[in-house]
Image (cartoon, rainbow, N blue to C red; front, side):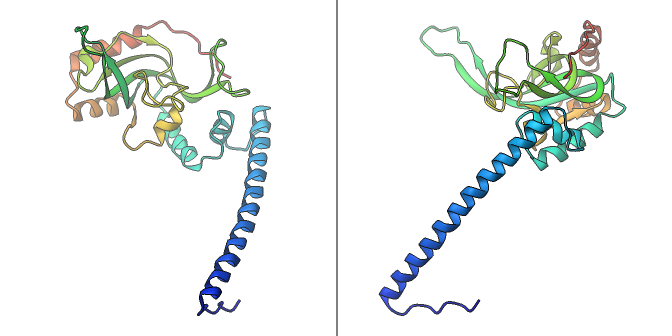
Length: 245
């Protein structure tokens, strides 16, 4: 298509602006129609997968079932994470993250203070798989979306990067990642959803005893005695069967 000659008069410039404006409006309308068709197609795909059909990729199925759609970056990183779990059943996994933590003040004339601090949670892998875990029955998130993606961890300890293992909590029952954190990221001292974690370059997931020790050592948090105490807490926690969808 030959190039449109440049207008030389003010009226010609105004005519061009009007012409291009109409063209833009037509394209925006076509784009809106295409977006609606895309959303509808994605909705049909999500419904089909929730009804038991598969795309042929279980990670992609997980993302579709948990409301993350066709997120290719998340899919590839979750595959990488799942590969790193192979052969690591019974070993440690560590999740580091930044979150808001509220500190109580002893003085009545001062408000409590809130800081964003680096935290970590550490648990034992009960299996080598990523799981789709049902929300508890009293929780409602989105209609039809009642599961979240998780590491197979039944108990974990938590601490800050400042305090390290010496001040770690006792074994806490539950999953290490917060299924609601894609709504409340960095709130309440909880880590983000697993999908958010794998996409974060700042907050890694560390898999395996050797790798966890190395991560702690690199941050001057490793003490052999404290490490064994914390590991014993996790190993000694009651074994319960996790309900899996």
